[in-house]
Amino acid sequence: MKVALDTNVVLDLLLDRAPHADHAAQVFAQIESGLLAGCVCATTVTTIHYVAEKAVGDTAARQLLAQLLSLVEVAPVTRPVVEIALDSSMADFEDAVLAHAAAMSGAEAVITRNGRDFQGGPLRVYSPTQWLAA
Image 1: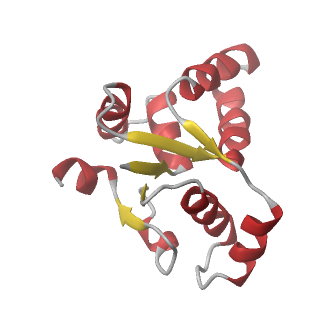
Image 2: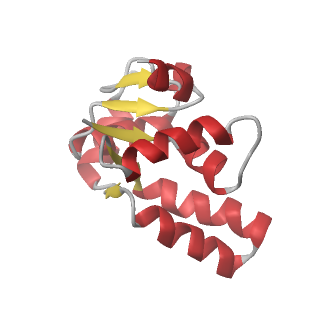
């Protein structure tokens, strides 16, 4: 199964944000071991760099992104993705773009700490805790 990883889950892991980093690491361990396929939205990549650069500097942020990209696919943001997101019933446009890009890339679920933002979207929604318990 392929899952989309919301930006907050990726940042939890990469920046070791307590208390969420442990669950994010367990999700990524499933990806690393091949039990799960993961993807991130193209917009997530730029957001991660922006946030990580502020925390650890440009060089380290780029190294974190390289590590991330060795594990996951990138769901492209295309005009059709944006148009579908604009018409989506999802309240948060940025999350609608992420969800629809991931769905068009074959993801079946999203792992996020902001589940309400993904309600009404094309993917099943799990928190990291819910995913690990399933």
